[in-house]
Length: 245
View (cartoon, rainbow, N blue to C red):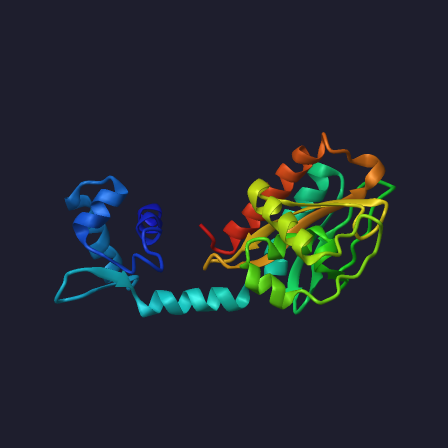
């Protein structure tokens, strides 16, 4: 019954706020009689509320209150830890979770590379957005107006590869969106490469970026897509843990 209840609850979202029996049955691929029994049982248990006038069901305030408790007691860092440890193990590179803080990215959790030669991305480090994989992943899915508002001017140069022209940076963000992940090649530190992917919460908003960083001698343009695929998988896993569908 619990699995059936979860299937029903998964039908509700910010667009589909209530459901009739026939609509729910069609979405579930179940007979109307079976779906009606499930909905009635969930109403009796306090998970759903049935509108007496329309006979449509919606999420109960009791369940909504429990959801708020979960939201307030589950931190992104706690959920990120096992994801980052997996990412560091499967890629052999240091992994980090960064969030946007004004006009910089800040590492809030991480897992170090198991290799003796590694890049260290410590928790609390503040990272320029235009020269980092985390910054690019945090910005790429925002509007151009938002990016222009967030980015400090002028863009500081850290290495010969740093992008310091805002228009060029916007082109780079478009490429990031198209491929689904960000890349930096010696843009923050000459001997470092990195890849990042966005993390979304239950509303679909980007709340962080998962990244890996490595010595440039260990990564080339041929094996970067394979490493980046693991980064995207980790970011998607963390997004799922945060309630994103």
